[in-house]
Amino acid sequence: MFWIPDDVTRWVKMQLPWFIDEWDSLFWQKVAGFATSVCLGWYIFHKVLRNKKLHDRIQQKQDKVRKSCQDLVERLRTEGLTVPHRERILSLSLAELQAQLQSGQLKCMEVLRAYQSKAMEMNEKLNCVVEPLIEAEDQAAKLDRQRGKKGPLHGVPISVKEAFYVKGYDCTAGMQHFIHKPVDHDAPYIQVLKSQGAIPFVRTNIPQTMMTFDSSNPIYGETLNPHDLSRSPGGSSSGEGALIASGGSCLGLGSDIGGSIRIPSHMCGVCGLKPTVERLGISGMFPLGGGQTLVKVAAGPMARDVDSLMMCMKALLVPALSSAWPLMQIVPFDTEIYESRKSLRIGYFKSNGFLEPVPAVERGVDMAVAALKKRGHTVVKFEPPRVRYMFNDLFAKAVFGDGGAETNSYLDKDVLDPCCRLGYYVFKLPYPLKMILSLLVQLIDADAAKTVRLRQLTVPQWFKLAEDIEAYKLEFLAAMTKQKLDVILSPTMPLPAIPLGKADESTASVTYTTLYNVLNFPAGSLPVTKVIEEDEKKLEEVYPTNTIHEKLTKKMSKGTVGLPVSVQCAARPFQEELVLRVMKDIEQEVKYK
Image (cartoon, rainbow, N blue to C red; front, side):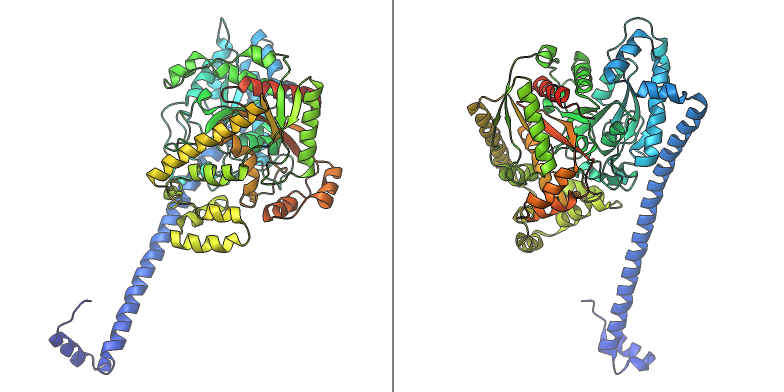
């Protein structure tokens, strides 16, 4: 404690007699109060100033992208197409569009204008586009002047998730720390797609950090579901799902570490493929969690139909991809497998043993099973091993192996989006408090209690986790081999699109998608039906409410008539062609509209 000499004390008492009787207590109380007020005032001032700087920085970015969209809309008013011509172009499938671009029946600029116009129109309603890519028009004009052989995606406009590097643009993942830091190169996927003739024309929205399947961030706002504006489009490839479903894009590029391609595909009613990680590589994406190597993020296509996914994969799997990223070993797309009519042995499950699917989802799987049997495939029941263990003890521990340290280091200096708040504050808690909280949560939800207890792993724990994941992969493969299975069919999600902002209440639902991230299996999602009145009636009558997860699922699944329902197909690593082939067989039989 700071010491004051006696002679100073006596002098002060002589000069300030009103303190004589209460010198030892009152004086120091006033000093402490004053010091506390100064410190508190400085803290508040600093926080207000910091928040103002954050909001100013975000506002500048918002103004910039808003102006970019407005400028494009203005150009389209004078340089756009007639409505009938635009609608004719938009009505074409990607295969039909490709044929007319190859023959010269359509010009690249015409097609680009059609999709720019539709994308801006849908963005007004859904907030799915981050910003248009201004160089797209130069690329289209250049391609229209081109003579000689055309690339397989010549003139095809593609939308790109904000997570991918595009030269000259920020890659933020919805976090202000990365504003005004444009990247200096295109991602390898973008480089290859451009070399194949494709035209990246817009970037699409994502949730903050992309570690949630919600659809909002403080920079670009919240994306809505085109089928129901009160519902989420899913995430983290939120904008891709919404834009493709609403007709504003015919082909897009997403990423997936826990379902981020397949969940928005399911909720928006489009097709999506999460490849084996090593099939396309991981370079040129937002780097959050890049050092985590046990459950990696995968890049993959999203589109309106399965053939479009195939065309994109075929265009990407060329030597140019290896040139753009030398660590890649290209395995070319095998068209023979995709077009084969050989009968397959397919295992299916409706429930993964963690969370029961709602009646609409069960009916969707039944439709897919019937379609595959009609195509001559053998379809048998399959029980995925230990899904609860996979999610709680493998996926969550790997993806959050640093105890949320990297994510929180950015969010500490950011405006916190509601979709990230719960995770942020839980990870900020000291471990003793986490243990106390987990005991309370345990009374309601034992699985959530395990999530609360997540902490930074030690090196020996990380090594053990790596061994456990490897053992689980072998266990799952052994189960497939025992039944001689080529492909697994299952729900993509156990319920339709959830209400906006409710991802935290539906964490158990991602056990259907995270399974294939842990296994590193290629997995694709395609829509097969929509929720009907009979499904809602069965939901009320037969859906169980034994657990907190089931109660929340039942609540969120009410009022979903008309929303899309998808199924998921998965196969062993590097069997993307087989996955797409089975998806195509289902698509041709169910004829989803």
